[in-house]
Image (tube, rainbow, N blue to C red):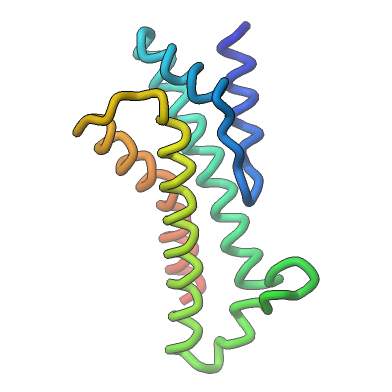
Length: 138
């Protein structure tokens, strides 16, 4: 039952801004003793964040921010350099934010090369969807 609750919490991490609670970090750390569940939950987190990032990227391109600020990136599609620059700036900012979310998620873990590799591979999985969307819109 606890596993299902944690899965549900991971699925709720689809907002623009994510708050990683101490409980979430502790729960993930505790699951390292059950490698299959740990991998499953980490995959679920990455999948949830990937879907959120794709939606946010498409919204940034087509709708812009809240109340139209910032303006939609597509408004600059007539200027290819600015258009690509704005898209890449958005991706850069999102990548930095997701990296911070992951570091917060893994804050209970001891720093190691394995942890660094886990964060990098998770970040790659999360941002992979933006690569596909970038190909479509560029």
